[in-house]
Length: 330
Image (cartoon, rainbow, N blue to C red; front, side):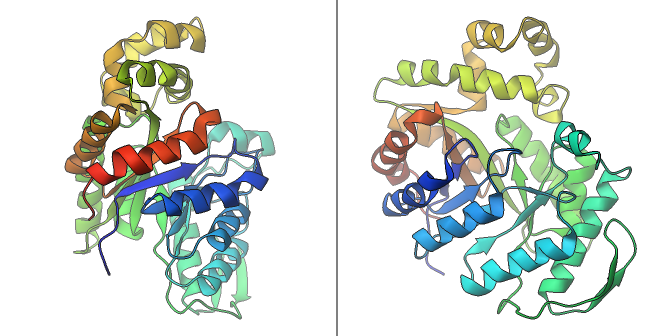
């Protein structure tokens, strides 16, 4: 396989479905090495949008990061994934995770054993895509289920995980980890150690990939790029309170104090260093240096999430001309 850029593009659920195909094609033309689609309830269907991105492109891999393990029966997830993997060989990378508890509570489907649920979901999906007939009674009940149309090879399965137990489990059962936005180099190094620990415990010698999502703002005026990103970063920092994404960086108490008065105060008063460390923002050389730092910390690819979101096409072009050429292929 020829080297490709470790810089990818994240197309978030805020993008209208009709805009996904042209944005995916634009990213491929601008040299991005991967595309990832999100599924944020109740915005867009991740697997449908992944299909649109695959249809609009020719060679770039497209990942789904992530789909909840419990919003669909595992056999239906396997059916969707196998269909895309069979239609677009070697280009579709499915991602599974628990999903935000608040969304699951809205539907009354929060599992009592989240780790086991994710494990059983991933394992059953892999078995079904591998051609097995599956009967099980656990997180998903199945009785003699077998897929009719199989991909030529089971695609790599990623897990979206944040905490230590879930990351270790990811190393044991998945091909890679999807690391959420706001994870800086400290978090990635911490996650890499846990992921490798889990893989070693399972007797796995192949490297488990880490795909790191990162908020991205680029501008020839580096200060303007960082300022433009503050509101988006504040929003995600507030959501991620109480997780290791925040505690590993060491800002839990300071963030909690700012967040008491809302996202607006976080955006206005958070230290500039948080923007430096927890996002990819600046001019072309500065953004490339931040990506290289995340790769050195343990990431295998860095997936840029344009912010503010309305500048998506502009930021894709900026990355294609000013950032990607400065980050060597892997």
